[in-house]
Length: 150
Image (cartoon, rainbow, N blue to C red; front, side, top):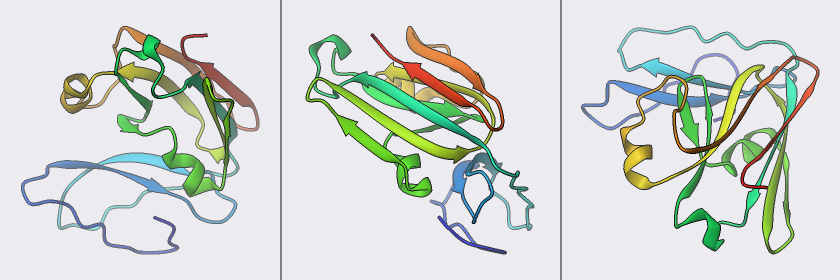
């Protein structure tokens, strides 16, 4: 969602936590895991962030063994193609590899992983601990390249 100021995020009944992608102007886009509550919550956006580049075999590649690609940050898991939409990033498709370049995202730890549906559904936040991941820390004003299964 791209909004300035206050907003309401609808969630399914019975949901106790949710992840939101928040982007506004020149502030770094932020993934935030929040408790679902009726009370107003404040989510601070930081100044300019860094450039994140994730690269992996194409989704249908045999070496992925029918696993899904997921980007993990701040206790949230999203499709690698989601943040480029939020931040007007880019996608490069060579036919065998897929790369996303995501400008101005929040600094911090990122992991790019190949996970099966059960692992993804069971993920409840924290550092991902899956067999196939590339991980690193993005510093403000810098660039982080995560290459999965080179």
